[in-house]
Image (cartoon, rainbow, N blue to C red; front, side, top):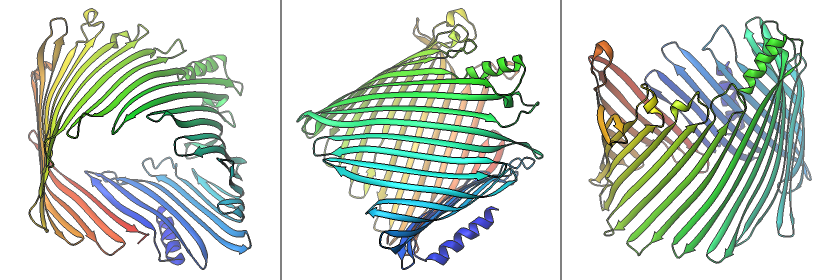
Length: 611
């Protein structure tokens, strides 16, 4: 089926025009997985009218079982002036989702709409459009050919210094088996922007009624009725309290309600006897103050966010009291109340032309509560993080810096069933870094020392949990050297040593249980010929893991992995509009005494419409 629509897409484009705006297509392969993509955004006009085409395709294939998953979307819009402010218009939309991962249960979905209409332009971008056409729908082998109605309305105007924008669109069809599909989206926004302040008030309402097919096997389908409503209100504003102090405020409220139920009762599915209702309310309040002095600034922000999700299971058909209670208990496990408060400090201070201080501090408290007596995930969490950077410019070609970060996290489960997992984490990170850039040579080494202590609140009561420590040393760099106008070499590498062990916070001592050593390098030499480049090289990876933990009869454990791969990185400019990129490596991998070969390849073509 996908091949048919691919041909339809290509033929449509070729028949309409050879002018192209933007096209991107290609694939990549990693081991036995292959991903395909074909994306396009095409806008052009000629004597036949104005055309807008959007294409999105993503496919995934797993070679071992020869399966493929398709996700295809194609949209075609056309309009042409008829008389005065009246335009002919056409909207065509195709969506296909298909897979054969489970051939015994066909879940493929195909939706195609062909909607001619009339558009009235009030002025510039303000318009009103009515569509009437065909909606073709195929889900789980249930076909539908039905008429459809749609409308679009977009109107903006100025009122004093304010811009007021209104939008409304809807789509309605009644598919086979008396299945309604009805969407409505309405939006009103008020905005004002001047030199020192801005204001934006937005309200959006969205509703969807969708009666869709639930397929349980090849011979049986159920219809599920789903209704969803969303109300989204937001306020964004910024202004200067005085010349150097700016305040930004954001207020966001989201209310979502959804109910879904089966049209008929199925004795083999007790859930079909219920009507499930879901309510979600979200508040998000945020304010930030920024004080600016020359190029430096100090910033302070506060954010509070609250989410409240509740679910209900209501009886729709005559089911047993036990089934009803069980379903109500199950759905109540999804209920939660989640809130967090965050304080944030940040500053960038130029001490002088050569010295810079960058600081940020975060204090966050999170509370997660579950109303159900059968749910034990209730928890509180505290996070404190402080990061300090200092950078110094030694010369126009050499600069360096140092970064120090400390982080504390305390997670507390409030119910005894999970309190064994109550934990404190304390981590320290220290990173010196440098950057050199002069003429044809540049490199930027970075050295990182990281330590993380993890201690459990109740480890003295249990033998199954023990506090631990992780320590690591990481060195990474990327070196570029340009020999001449044609040849360049790039070398990147990473070295990391990490050890993990049991740790006693009281005695501040550890015993190492695992040691991990990694080394990775990727080296390529490039040849440039005008707009084309050709890169070849090699990548190497070595991993060794030594464990001192007792693994029963196996005793101590060791793990070794080595990988070496030839690499190619090619880029071609076929013409002013079209470029081609290819990157791949052929990996020879050895794990212990076992060997395997892993091919990896990425191919991408880009076509730029605007040239």
